[in-house]
Length: 74
Image (tube, rainbow, N blue to C red):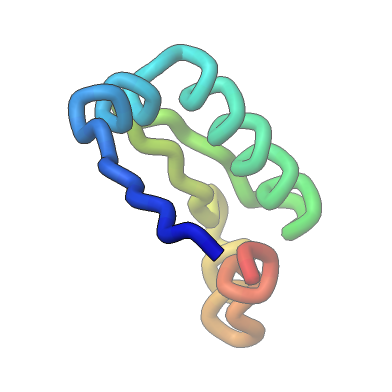
């Protein structure tokens, strides 16, 4: 079997990670996780980052007691 060499194009990867398509895909995944976590959870976009947060006191307590967000992103 022939050896295959792979050289990563770092500039291209950076461009891909900061693209609108990636932001859209990440926001869709975060929104799905927030909806499946239940009421009080919300997806937020912060620049090129996307996070899911407990947006109410009840959701914060639920996340504290049950690790809800951790379970949703596994």
